[in-house]
Amino acid sequence: MKALVYDGVETLGFRDVPDAQPGADEHLIRVEAVGICGSDMHAYLGHDARRPAPLILGHEAAGVIQGGPRDGDRVTINPLVTCMICPACAAGRENLCPSRQIISMQPREGAFAQYVAMPDRNLVTVPAGVPRAKAALAEPLAVSWHAARIALEAMHPSMDRRALVLGGGAIGLAAALALRAMGIPDVTIVEPNEARRAFLAKTCGQAAIAAADANYPLIIDAVGYAATRATATERIMPGGVIAHVGLGEDAGGIDIRQYTLQEITFIGTYTYTAQDFRDTAAAIFDGMLGPLNWTETRPLADGAQAFRDLRAGTVAAPKIILTPWA
Image 1 (cartoon, rainbow, N blue to C red):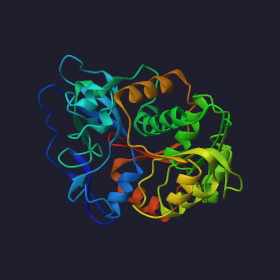
Image 2: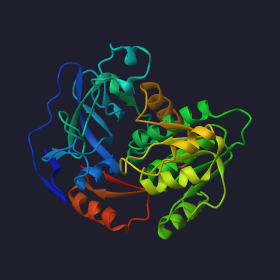
Image 3: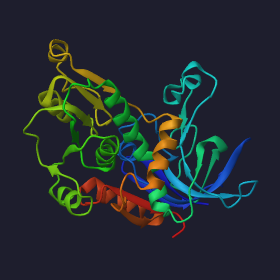
């Protein structure tokens, strides 16, 4: 099969690789759409030790099952594979499973390929009529759905129903959509890239500003750099909640004294539970998250150029979807 392989820092090769081989209780899936995630970009830049080269990246995927009792089923893929028997899994907190694996990270190759193998429990059926690119958004949208859910659970009921989202990429945009779907009517996105702000306003109908000039009871950091954490620290109201999703860099931007004296709740959020993923997929299929028409589609064979364009900041769309079978 053909695959886009991460060969080293800022180096990707599109070439033949051994076919994906499903294990016991797994299905072979013909990948029809796969998104480029921020974590793929971190690996591409050599910033993720969990993703050493050579490796097939990509984990935001949808496709069609090939062979077996579910042959021909259209599915979207939950890429998080967990043990299902540990206390975290038993509690429905699969994202905290100590033996969790995710495709695009050793030992599981990713979905920037024509085929990928996944357990049956990780597949959610996609209704007829739902486009493949929209189905592939289930994974990044689930990340934001999970973050919005746990942030709202931590928010004091006396506080205003307003939120600030830092970052207008796919995770930030998805967080804004999830917050609105969960009953927060006033959501503002901070996005420094002028072209992306224009795209968010025109195509996505989102309020996007270059910099925040007000304080908020709830802030979601979808970037995760010291600078965005500093912005969250500056703009959070006393008693407010900061949900940290981005993995841009490890340190900086946090004022523990302020968090203590003002009772700020800071929550790190990672991926999603299996229920979050199913709920997100249902919200996509039911139209609760809007038209989701903010993606750009390119052939997988042109994936290396897509990464270069993202690196250069010349892509206005929050998400590039690659199609292995163009």
